[in-house]
Structures are given as structure tokens and as C-alpha cells.
Length: 83
Image: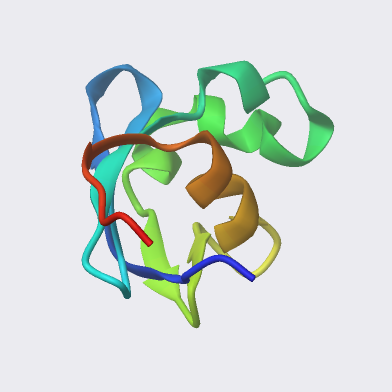
């Protein structure tokens, strides 16, 4: 199991700045996901900016979230710990 998200910041160009509970940090692009039906509402940048860390997930509202596994596996790390 991958670590959960501790904090998230929505950036321009539909990118997320992430910090995981293990201290690792990196970026994640939501652009490839914006055409999936569940993520279509995030094309509204005002909604996208509302990203928050919720119980290890990144969520935008009660209907839209992304699992920590997906975020961790596809994250472009700027600070990664070696296991």
C-alpha cells in the first residue's frame, strides 16, 4: 500500500503539488484525467482549485476524489525517500 496524501495545492495548468505522509513531495498532472466522466467537472478551474487532502485522498467535493495509490504511482517526485 502506498502512502496517503498529507497536503495538496492546486497549481496552474491542472497540476497538483503533493506531500505524502512519508514526507515525499512531487507534482501530479490531472490533464490526462479531465476527459474521464468523473473528472469532467474539474475543467472548471474554480472547482479544481478546491483540491484538499481528505483521509489520504485528494478530493474536490463529495463526488470527486483520487486515490493515494494512483497519485503516488504517477507522481513526478521532487523529493523521494529510498525504501
